[in-house]
Every structure is written in structure tokens, then in C-alpha cells.
Length: 605
Image 1 (cartoon, rainbow, N blue to C red):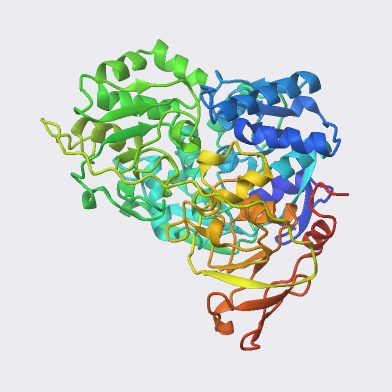
Image 2: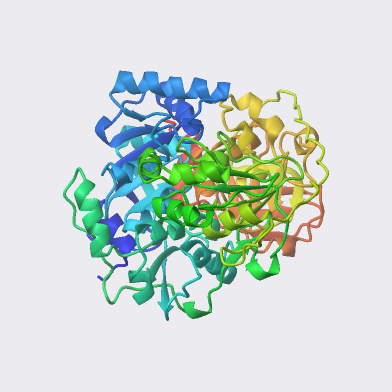
């Protein structure tokens, strides 16, 4: 039977010759990774359940979220991981290495056709080389470290054909921002995307990494590129394992096929709040900025550094503007040093930090303050994701040019004199809420509870559980932070009661792989979340934690009012509004989900 590229990779790592969409299959994992913010929880899970490590030589810690070790909780987590690594013979990529997925690719542990899981929600970046990468929560990673494999639901595949030649002024970041403009954050939710066309074939590794890294922001499982000879040669030179790349069968079935005329693509910018809220640069031209950031797993590669250097050479960052540059890996950092790029950056007035994730993980340079306007090469600009200010997303060329101009502009439109401005007023700090320690409700098949109606789409994990609390590992501490970054619900943790049920919209839990965004509800005693759809990683995390989530597209038929009491059958999916007796049906628990629920979680016995 014909298979897509992803189906070929996953079948080769399963016990089956053929896999099809919808099947739940155990997948052998070639590379298993825990980062510094999730590593402490992975270690805790392993120790709590007395689990051993299968194939330590395929198992890694990467300290890329806080490579400065500047936060006490991060420092504790990092040292916990170091000690566990020494004990178990697990390699630690410490604070001098850089972003884990990039480093493991450089060092040859990841290659075309391989499989990788990580606590990094952008592990799907590995689709750039025709490999499977997936971000997963702490329980998944602990289970994978112990078993060497993990269950996975085979997604349906989508094919995107690029037609025409990409305009010269359109970068790889512009390509993915144009795609976000077309598809939004959830129209391809849960799909595997494959990219084809002559212009795709001409994209180099760094370009492909930029595009693949934002699959998460499109709601997709992964964006896969068939590997070219150049990609295969790069990986062959570095790989520690002989490999044969996979390619889709010519008659493979795709759920949807799109043909896109790329000649219409333009340089784009994402406006603050949502990566898919993209506009052409001309629509925000001249907007004053306070700061600029270049780096992240999306745009911290050598190509990006060269483009930035070309803009900054013999120029100065505008007065009052802060420019922060963070290469993705130490190898790239050293290349920048050897080729004179660091000198260009410093002479221009930029701050250059050691390799890592930087502001994306709230653990390094790149954060902004209330009222601050930043233009960034990052992949996310959720409110509060990279600080309390506003975050525009753009290509490295646009970010560098804007830093010099003092306002948003392009590299071919930098004014002779920079724009000067008055800083906006600072916003008030959000207070951390406290919540009393309450008993967790017992698990049961039929639950009743009061509803919270939060009818919003794309509620991301930074709104649910902000990244400034990521180092929190004690369940009792998590509840107080729930929704404190979701506008209008900052006091949720004070008002929520044990037994409450949340009703919400599409793509709930999009964004990061953090398990805390599930566990915080358990800490408050919330019984369940019912949504029109869930982010892929969030859905896994909830299932693995035995936290009831149900998908229901017919919620409007219940005529719910905030505070209504409802009855929910966890097994069958039946939901009843006890006020008006209206009944609808959500998707019932799958056999796998129900089995995990019954035993109290993925790691239960």
C-alpha cells in the first residue's frame, strides 16, 4: 500500500509494514531528549516510578532554555539532570552547547528518516531534513526513556505544492508567515504537511529549518521536506548511523492538496498576540520599536547571522533601541567569531549572548517589559510569551533593518537618520494569585460540575500557565498560576471551585509542550475541559495525566449559561445540561485514552 513520507518513517519504526491515518502505533524513538525546564520533571517521574533507562546512548539532556543558569529553579533542575546523567551514563549538552535539536543535528544523532521526541514543542523542526520530530510532555519523555518507544496516532497528511519562483525579497521566514496568513492557526490542526515544488527543492537546510520550526504555530504535527542531495550529504558527513532517507510513494493518499502561487508572496510581519495575524511590512512601516531580537530555533542559523551582518555592517543600532543577537548553537557562534560577524554585531551596538533559546523560554536575553515594543525573529508572539510588552515577528533582515532605523522597515528602505521616539507608558504588573490547598476529586466515569464558559479559540499554553513559572515542579504550587495570563480570567484561580468544568473553543492548549498547563487544572480540582478541539501536544499531555478532556463541536446546542451544572459521561461522551435537560454527545474516550485514564495516567500500573 502506498504511503506518505511521514507514514513511511513511522512504519519503519513500528512492527508494521504499513501504517494508516488514525491508527495508534508504538513507535521506536532513535533520539530521546529532555531540556532543562522539563528535565527535572522527567527525572522525578523516572525515580517516582522506579523506571530504568533503555539505550542511554540515545538519551540526552539539553540545557538550552536557560544556558546562563541565571534562575535558581533552573539551576536546581540543571544540576538534578547533571547528577542523573552521571549516574545513568546519559550525555548532557550543558549551558555552552545551544538549542538541543540543532546541536543533535550538528552532532549526527538526528538524520533523515530518524525519529526524535523532546520536551521541546518545536522538535518538529526536524521535518526540515525529512525526519520525524515531536514535542511531548514530561510523562511521554519518561516513558520513552524507559521503553525506547512511545504510542503515536498516525495523522492524516496534507501536500502543499509551491508553484512559481519565490521573489528575491522574500525570505524563508516570509514564506512561513505567508503560509500562516493562508492557513491560520488551526485549519491544518493535527495534520502532517509535506512540501513540494521546484522552489522547495532550492531551499537550503537553514531555510527549511525556519519553515519547519513554525509547524506548531500552524497547528500541524510537522512540516516535512523530502531531503535533497545537499541535505543527505550534510547529514551523511555528520551522522553516527548509516541511514537511508525516505520518500513518499508517488501514489500516496493525501487528505488535502494545495497548490500555492509563491510569486505572490511578500515580506510579512506578524502583529502582537498571534503568529498567524500577519500583514505585509508596508502595513506597519514606520512603527517605532524599543527593542529587537534575532535568534531562536527559527532564525538562529548561520544564514540568518550572515543576513544580519550584511545589514548591520558599517551601521549603528538606533539610539534607545536594544538589539539582542543569540546564535542557535555554539558551533554557529564560533563561526560568527571566526568570520568577523561578532565584531560587526558589537560595533553596531548589539548585545550578543551565548547560544540557546533566549527569550522564547524566559531563561535568557530577549525578554521585554510592559509597554515595550519588540520586533523578533522568534516563532511565537503570544501575549506574555517573551515578556510583558508587544512582540512583532519578522525575518532577520527586517529585524536588523528595523533596529538600525528605530522603526519597522526593510533592508532596502533604511532612512539616513533613525527614528527617535518617546517610550510608551509602562503597564501595571500582574499580581500572582494564591489559592488554598484543596483535595483533588476522585476519578469517576460520570461527573457533574459547574461550568466556566471561556468561548475563545487558540488559548495557548502561555495564557494557561505562563513560561515564567516553568521551573515549578510541585503540583500544589501550580494551581495559583492558572490563566493568570489570560485577559479577563486573571483571577480564575481565586474563583474556581473543586469540581468545576471548563467549556472552551478551538485549538485549546496550542503552543508549548509544558505539562504544567494540564497539571495546574488538576491542582485546582477542575474535573474536565470540553473544547471544540485541542492542540496536539496538549491533548497528549492531558490523556497521559488521566485528566479528562472531551472534544465536542456541538456545544452551542446545549444553550449553556455560565455557571450551569452539567453531567458528563467520560466513557460515552454524553453531556447533559441539568438546567434545561438538553443532551449532546462529545467524542467518546478512545480505548487507549480510557485505559490510561483507568490506571491513573501513562506511568500508572
